[in-house]
Image (cartoon, rainbow, N blue to C red; front, side, top):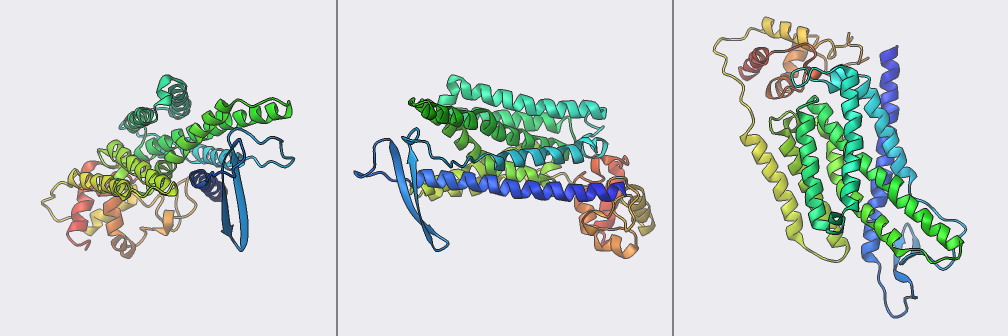
Length: 393
């Protein structure tokens, strides 16, 4: 019953996380597009950056952006904040439910660091706090005014974090924490800078004072940073589905490359929104991704050559020892109430059917068993691989 309840709780929180994330990223994409499309002419009133007419859903819309604030505060003002807060709160709940309550399975890899659950959790939370402290310090330093240099330093910082976390946590736990660092930075930008600055602008207007334009500029800078981090963080949130990346010996470098690809592709669309057609930027983003793929394939570890024929009886024993606690019609694992993704290895037919999947997850990479909880050896993995390569008979 406990496993069933946890599974439904996981589903509900994950669904909320996806819904809120779509709303947050959607609003980020929209306002970056809107800012780029605003036009000013001789009829534009003083204090207005520009305006835009748009049509959608059968209706016409007129948008206008003020350089600092309107002359009079409107009675009904919408604040874009709960999309961000809900995304982070639901993501944090998932981090706790999956990676902290299930730390021995999902977060800890004894082959890297034999941590107690509380130690692993402390390192994870500390990484989130340190990520924000470093990022915010960089923004407030003179480096924050030099956009390209700031971007390069922050990218290298995240790459260093990817390397470090991948040597402490399980691969899955490492890269979900890297995504959580970026997500925490993004929501802290909203909570600690953007919304407080907007409140100061509103307070100044209500007091009959002229708002400080620097408040809006600082908020805009953090908003732009968030926009460029969206595609990398989206990949990190689904990275556990791609063991050929996160379980690769150069996983930290592959993830950095995919992040650079996402940043470049986002830049292409931001330029395009501003009516600047630079297709080579998009080509560069795709080229970076292809380079990452080629690097991964060229450096992919090869399974050892097994001289003897591996009998199916030995394969069944290995599967029963290391796999069926989770991948069964009736799992005995405390984590799963049903076989993950519906994949069960109870019968010879099922084992043969999923042989390519077994090879991908347990031979080509070490993603299964999760956290190598059962202590599967490299020799055992090679024996499975030899059986699959021989035709999975």
